[in-house]
Structures are given as C-alpha cells and as structure tokens.
Length: 110
Image 1: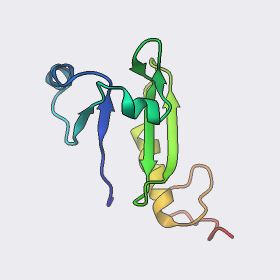
Image 2: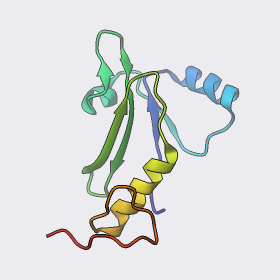
Image 3: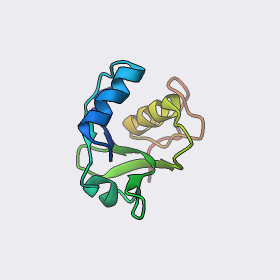
Image 4: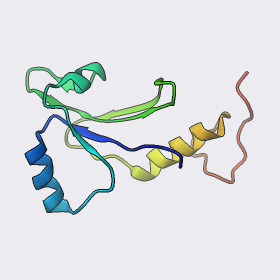
C-alpha cells in the first residue's frame, strides 16, 4: 500500500525479543522508546507510570499526522479499520463513514 509500518513501545529491546518469541515473528521494525521521547512527543506517555497508551498514527510523506487513534492499555486495535482509513486517505477524496474500496467517494474537498 506504498506505506511503511513501524512499531514502538517503551519496552527495551530484550522485552521486544521475548514478545516476538511468544507471539511469533513480525514483518516490520519494532523500535524501543526506552527514553520515552517518542511517546511524549506523540502525547501518549503516561508520565507517572513511564508507559504509553496504545496509539496508532498515520503520517503522510511530509510528516503530517493524518490519522491518530489512541486506546487505553486494555483495548486492542482493529487492523481492518486502520487499513480502511489508510486506503481512504490515499484516495485524496472525501470518504464517508464505512467507506470501502469500490464504493464511490464524496468527491474532492473544497
């Protein structure tokens, strides 16, 4: 989809290694935000605990955040919905709720 996926967490490299051994290999880079700098910059760091909320960000080639979704620690994310949003953003047009490829868009933004 002409996109790059990066994973990140406030855990260290060894925790990432243990996690992938438990769930299986992943096919994207996993970054260690041990300094909490990235989590802090994206506004998802829980300062008092030193951990981050579960955030998903779609950033365009110019570095602008086009989509963000932040969940509490105990809530998972929908990969299908994230892919739907990415596809909608890539149309460059207005897409209604529930839009899927093959469904007409609402046209270009004014």
